[in-house]
Length: 351
Image (cartoon, rainbow, N blue to C red; front, side, top):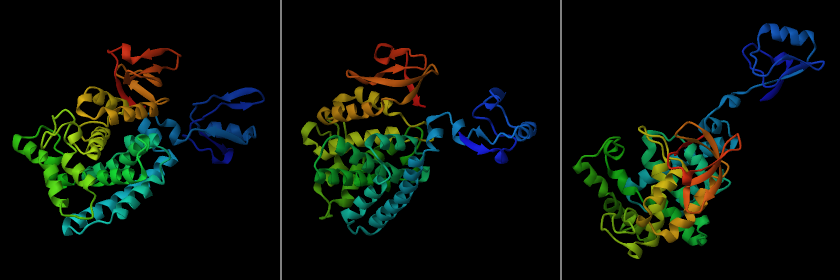
């Protein structure tokens, strides 16, 4: 809401607060301003009134974020850096001339100048609506940004954080060699198409294997990021600690990034929904890495508002230590709901 002078009143505006005169209400909040109201305000010599702004009509989380100045700054910087990153990678794929690490780290740092915390990053990425034509690049840029946040949450050394960020920028490079209509096909892939997609870690590794300047952990993250701790991954069905530690990090980053990104056929999953996916697939990831990250992600959701499958709106009050994705909620009537004890309720989206 904002306060305006009587000279700025125009028909169609909506009052944000009651208009008072000598202790009496002339017009109630929510009234639509018309010419007779303007004339009466002028006659009574009322100097200022409060009216609603566009942001006051935003009802969903995404609508509200469009008026958030910090998010706007992030979005502008993100889109600028996405184009820089795309240009760097297209040039690399065309020439195979090595990329100086600092070129990519500078892109990461430039975006991060507009982010306060890892929790804020999760919120901003949840709100972003990526250009469908740029999904192959947003996937890796988002992974690099998340890698930096996750590295901080895991208390990695500065050098390991740097390596992990580079892993995020490079890990999915093999996918860029696939046809777009296969890569982002909304329906079920044919057996032949699925075989081509599953080969992208090998394709990506082949592109970088002779790059003597690229860290070996980054190369391993490219070829191993779809391996799973229980041996169910691909391309080599590697198990446990045989998988490079940075590939184990990136497996978690990749899963989070993919689920947090909206698609034409579905909305982005909320952080708590993503945690539910991890909880259902714990054996696929290194739990020594996954558990502290899940705790940080869950804690970042305290205070957020969510809509359940029955349409009700609740605030995340407490995180359940045995089920991070099923927190204790509180509504506007000060009623409490422990999702861990009510399987009939599920979180649909942030609001």
